[in-house]
Image 1: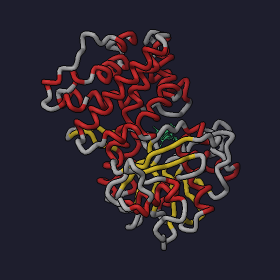
Image 2: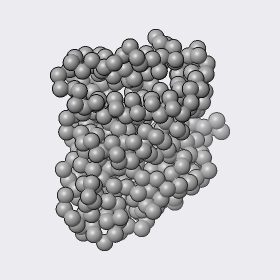
Image 3: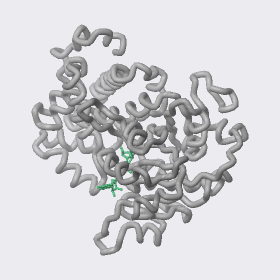
Image 4: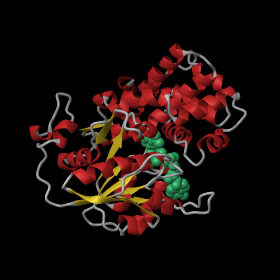
Length: 387
Ligand SMILES: NC(=O)c1ccc[n+]([C@@H]2O[C@H](COP(=O)([O-])OP(=O)(O)OC[C@H]3O[C@@H](n4cnc5c(N)ncnc54)[C@H](O)[C@@H]3O)[C@@H](O)[C@H]2O)c1
């Protein structure tokens, strides 16, 4: 870390320093494309577009790839976005900025960009990357705002790694206590960029996203930041079950604490390089809190528990979210597969139980049955240090 990038005592690159005059001179004008246009994708495009207008180092126009849909009016979503400057389906009532251009053609949307912001539900990313392979600029850099992971036979694959593997480019991540609808109306929040090695690249992403109402800092810990953002959705489901069962605040706090402990242990068992300090950034404890208080995973899990588990989470997702995607249920399944494959199930009673509740194997009340499930650390040598 060099002081010119605004290192703070806790080893982060601060937004205030990168947003001011301390940035290294950037000679090339960067072009940004946002791949994804759901709720968070649209808010990210708005945030970025207000900055590209102000910063000389970025081209004004921000392309946004839209997974094309036909609206009930018969119009195409991308055409309506370009006419009304508003994503009427996923972010109604918010102007995106005139310099946001919706493009339903994936290849044309990325063709000129050297800064690619990926923000789609995680289950679509493998297909998107395969379509983009060989079609992007040689000097492209990526950042992923996506929460989730892919589980393959050889083991778990974080979305940033998937992007790097399939597209051959460096990929940072941005995660945080960021419920999109609140940022859309410019309520103050913070976020964390996770980067690998290049501080200059991290500083550029911080500069692109940072705003007086959206304070961004960076830490050199891609896996830690990304796993925080991914795993908290599983804990949010548990918090929703607690809400649906009307168990109260003490129980919810206990679930959040146990969840944070499992998040940290799981991350460090998978990637020993993950830093403890990352869990105290916005991507860690702050995102966990906001997701367990608000957020769509908590909301659907609450409805699931109120119905005694009789209506499936798929059904509730379709009814309550209207096209938006619930990431926690698939992440809980993916985490379970990793735990099962590695023989770690007994170490992670909360993660294990959440998945078993989601698939109907256990009732929602099982979320607080812990006394018989004390983790047996001797199952995995050296694991006790991570809990
Ligand atoms: N919404 C939030 O508050 C929030 C905050 C932080 C992070 N995130 C993360 O951002 C990512 C994107 O979420 P979002 O809220 O922008 O989306 P969303 O759930 O609001 O919308 C779903 C999106 O998926 C698209 N889609 C549907 N089928 C598709 C397909 N076959 N291929 C490609 N795209 C398809 C839809 O057009 C839509 O743009 C997720 O990983 C989510 O966890 C969301």
